[in-house]
Length: 388
Ligand SMILES: NC(=O)c1ccc[n+]([C@@H]2O[C@H](COP(=O)([O-])OP(=O)(O)OC[C@H]3O[C@@H](n4cnc5c(N)ncnc54)[C@H](O)[C@@H]3O)[C@@H](O)[C@H]2O)c1
View 1 (cartoon, rainbow, N blue to C red):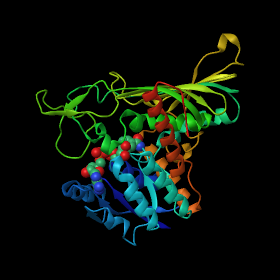
View 2: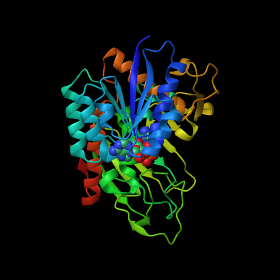
View 3: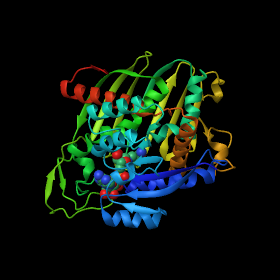
């Protein structure tokens, strides 16, 4: 059995998610194309690095990412650090011949994202992947199948929202996600990028946007340490505060190259919404609705159903659907975020073994950054802006 030695850089929330994905992939997808070996974990914080080694079963831990990138024993690198570090680490890893799975957004600036896509293009034998995992949810793949098979007719409109609530409390601390020099953008890059990916996956390239960005909470309490606890910690209201220089909310209308229109909205300040990534598509022959909070379901409505029977109906995904046979063998047993990250790793390892770039290679991640850039320019100018 082929083995691939894995190095994970950044052992926070996504470091854990990648470990769950690598470890569980062969347990679900068997026979696996290759079995990942948890070789080295890196975190800039020595305590987090040491804990991650024991907790996640790595052979060793390091605190400098170069010790992974320059290690000839490492085949595969997962970049799970804050956004401003993605470019330097990924480009060094590509140059060292490692396959790279980098968390999204691809980078904290458009220039850095372009450099990453260019570096990837220069070494075609290296597989690169941006971690836009939501397009791999079996119900989303099913939705895409309905679109591709023409079951919805021509797409008229695609409405995408990504709503969370973890930053709605003004006492949620000023983590790196609220600092432009680290994150690059606020909600737009963090979760807006995911729905740009879903929208373009379903309806093709976005051509033009008109948008608004809004910051609701202009300053937040300063936190200790580099890890973003995503609102799980509330600091005392009289803690020292510092300004937030990124947006809390993005709202925009979009025109696609294929003539469809749509809207994208994202916020982390929507009380009552947790991980509400929802996409509703209306076509000339039907509609579909997906909501990640019920990720094992797809709502479908077909225009040619008899009138007394027409309306949204629910398909529960399971073994009959894409990736389904590998997960659980009875519909309704359901998958969650852990299985989704294993699916993502399956696609990444498959791409490596077959030497074929995955659907979310760095060029696609860069394309998403171009849309983000147009959204920022439009919000600034209050005008429609072409995606360049
Ligand atoms: N795909 C998704 O759905 C998803 C979800 C959450 C986060 N993300 C992305 O994953 C990345 C990490 O986010 P997170 O939520 O895991 O953050 P986090 O704050 O939980 O963890 C980041 C970790 O990286 C470490 N770190 C920082 N700089 C480093 C460096 N130079 N070298 C080594 N380690 C370093 C920190 O100490 C921390 O432990 C971000 O790009 C984020 O946008 C993606």
